[in-house]
Amino acid sequence: MNNFEARVHLATVALASLLTSFISARIFTTLFPNRVLVSGGLHIHHFWFGLALLAIGGWLGINYKQKEIDIAAAIIYGVGGGLIVDEVGLLLTFGNYQSGLTWDAVVVLISFIAILILFYKYRKKIEEELSEFTSSKISLTLGIFLAAISIGFIGETNNAIVIAVSAGLTTIAIVLILIFMIRRNRKQ
Image (cartoon, rainbow, N blue to C red; front, side):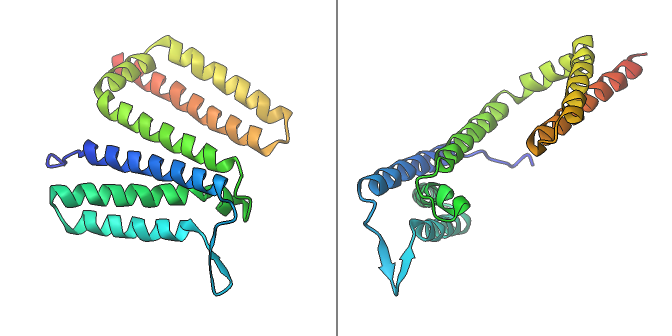
């Protein structure tokens, strides 16, 4: 694991390519909604071109280690990803291309990547602060509060989403309480 080399520049190039591809596909399909590739009576969505580009970019990135090819692979991979992400709403709704799910997917993707970058960059500080927090009585109080509220919600509703979120929060609460108790017992 000591030989791991983060190539953040390539991830940045791929992400920029993904966003550019996504925005370009969104603009094109909004301005020209009736321009489609039809072959043999089948509407060929740009999702398929995205899959092909992902495969090509991935193959280039795996098989060659040369600066120019790495950058080209990141661009091709990102463009393919953007074409696929643009079709998320269509794929999840089986036909509603204008679904808001597509924009939601992009926001979630960008947020997830940003969080990963921040965690990677500040992981030592986050680990320190998390260790301090889980050793404090505040974490115990928060765990008890979360468990009580979450269990209350579970008991008061039949909504599956509320129950699932509450169950997840209850699990987090129990973990917080257990970590606090384990740390307290180790100190004694």
